[in-house]
Amino acid sequence: MTLSRKLLLLSAVSLPLAACGEQATVPIEKTYGPNPVLVEPKTSWVPTVNVADAKGWAAGETPKAAPGFAVAAFAEGLDHPRWLYLLPNGDVLAAESNAPPKDESAGQKSIFARAKDWVAGLVKDQAGAGVESPNKIVLLRDADGDGKAETKTDFMTGLMSPFGMTLVGDRLYVANADAVVAVPYKEGDTKISATPEKVVDLPGGPLNHHWTKNVIASKDGSKLYVTVGSNSNVGENGMEHEVNRAAILEVDPAAKTSRLFASGLRNPNGLAWQPEGSALWTVVNERDEIGSDLVPDYMTSVQDGGFYGWPYSWFGQHVDERVKPPRPDLVAKAIKPDYALGPHTASLGLMFYEGDLLPAKYKNGAFIGQHGSWNRKPPSGYQVLFVPFSGGKPSGAPEQVLTEFMKDGVAYGRPVGVIADRAGALLVADDVGNTVWRVTPGAQTAAARP
Image (cartoon, rainbow, N blue to C red):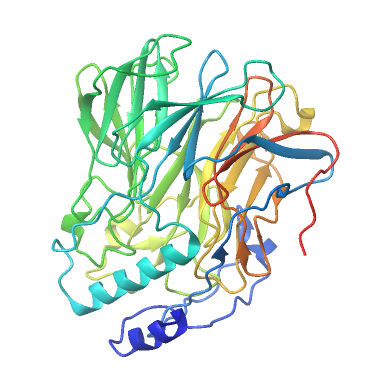
């Protein structure tokens, strides 16, 4: 049965979703920046679905680098690499991961919720996100410094949909889908044999709608900050399932305790400290089902105790009329994000550049991995962007650095995590292309596709 036929069947159960086939009316470039164009929400009974078929790269093919850059594979033949972390000796850790199994008997009992999950599963399969989670972290080593990893070893196995990683002293912390765990690490280790020690539980099953959990450490290493996405689109599964979700948690690893640091962030992923100040920044995937032009994903500085709207309002204090009962008291407190990143772009990766390999204009600016839309016409994302910063704040229009992960309705790859390697080149995890790409100054080298 085709996806279109299945969506027609879905319409028979009358799900309150966004307009099927509804086209964006706002030019995509106007949906970026501190003051994006925001239109009126559009709702209908059938969702907008515009999924790029996941194909992967043929031998010799690469995404397209912007003028002045070159791109080549740092590591190939990976298994759904999502997130990257640079160790002090230059080794790169890649979390090979996907969603954990869902408990189909739990939580959602209505025919509407079950049908909606069914469609979500179809979308994931077509987009290349339906693979079984490898549940491991691999170590990539470029011993000779030629920009290509010669070795790939299983560094940690038997994890639970791992995502974020951070090293503090001799302890490596990993954010599983259900807990932060820690293991001892010695520089040069290629395999961890110790049993992971649980630091704190994280909101997990049985629904675990947004499963990815990221973690970074404070600058002094005394605290950890962990992202936790929402358990729904706009609270439709009940706010009782959203405790400590749509949030960033602050973890005290010594005391093994956590507290709510910031909330109302539908699905935060990337976390980074802005080098020109002390602010924590995150990129957030916003809500769906109110049109191709809404709601823009965004990056924002994060305030301790700050509330950013979800589910009651979007991009500041624009009330979402679907959420019942309303909370005007919380809407009044909602903080407007600093910088919009386009609707449905699935912005995941975030890294502030502190290296010296790239031209000086990139110093302290943000590189963002946009995984790509599945519910926008025309598609959005499927690229790595740069946003310049000055004085700790965004200071200009975004610049495309790596594009054509998707072309003519086919997804050759989908970028996720973005880091800088020891030399200062960009590394980009591509979970559909099963590749880590390396971007350096130089001439464009992408192979042409028909």
